[in-house]
Length: 626
Ligand code: BF8
Image (cartoon, rainbow, N blue to C red):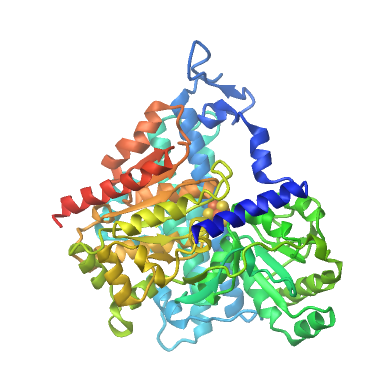
């Protein structure tokens, strides 16, 4: 499987070279050597005294014009990244909350409430009364409560109480329990302006608070409310890789993050007019395929095929078989406009907050979602006649099957059974050593790592061979799916203990839990493991870890920071974002342990990361006496 996926990435790169289509790998090479000051976080341009640089070697400046030192530079930068990442996930969550309210009020006719059980569970957390009330009334109040989480003037976030009590106390003691989500993002910007917070430890505490507002706030709101509207993921079979595109079909690729667009496109594709129009255009039908986190959302809920992860976005267009790519927001490269010009592909933006110069724009709203979706599909069908068959090149073919859809509820049901859903069997298998621990692999793919290197696939293989259960999200999960790691048959690559558990339960050893906002599912699963008993009283005692090998987006930093602040040892591959500030680096990689019971690690040599994870897991097992 691995060889096959490598071939897909590399074959497409060769193909694009042949067609003289520029790729992110070309542009990355053109950037080398990248700015040393920026890479080390020793550049500050927050005010017009600057831009200022600090010389990490030699006798150059050691302070900015205002006197800020390297630690302040790096901590401000780190906090702004954490705040920006939180902003992205949380604005996504807010859009879902607005959609839930609009749906409950009957103002978004393209949507309905699909998971009433989940609605009731969230209502309980929010303290919304459910007895003798209509579903829509409950949903409206849940949506409004969720919206209040962004701007309420007092108190802390409601979902924090889902964490183990010991963890909540850690947050209280450290003074990092997040208040309203927007308040934390706004305060992060305020503190990092010129003349604001200039104590790297204090800035890093705020980076924890704003990141926790992502994991236990904006992202958790996005995940939970999306499940209410679109269904909580359950195991579902799907396919992944560019081979999901079909030569004789109209191919539409949906790219971005917020599932309301993709869900509407899927719903509208079932309109009888669509079948008629595609047939009249000479196509055998319409393929909808996802890219990036939109792909993850569609795959885990519906088994809709995934074209690829983020470094494959240009390659999807370069198949020459994509009639239309439609995007919403986040991780969408401006370069796609140029890529599309080499082919017949139409490129459509949909949100007023994410336009791209040179794209066609079809405004997408909750109220008129289906009309916009149908219009977009018809534009794709209309464009089928413009396809140049000589340019069509779809690599792969019999792409690997994927079994995805492992929400934390599903993991509970699979392990414990529908009527005794529980994490008890997982805890028991960790205690008896069949499973040594659990690792979440999350995050992006990057041109800094060569095409086809498949770092996540290699790591996941090493971990499962050593009886570690892997849970994947985001593009890391996308790479593992394309790499053929998400099928129950894969159990043969597992160590004996993990294989026995996977066989008994019928699940793959690498579980696809969804998009990047769905890392919130991992937080809930870890909390439930603690509450189930036998593995200590806090998340920081569990034999678990988080890994992101190829981080790119600021969202990845926010995720890493909330994992650590939630008690999870977290390793990032490639470079540290604060490498030029030794005290700041030591704070993240050592001293945070004293504050929150977990720390960061940064490791350039990706081959070492498997061992770091396993050593950590064994250390935690020893401490638990198991
Ligand atoms: O939120 S993993 S490249 S697609 S940032 Fe982006 Fe990174 Fe992919 Fe989804 Ni997450």
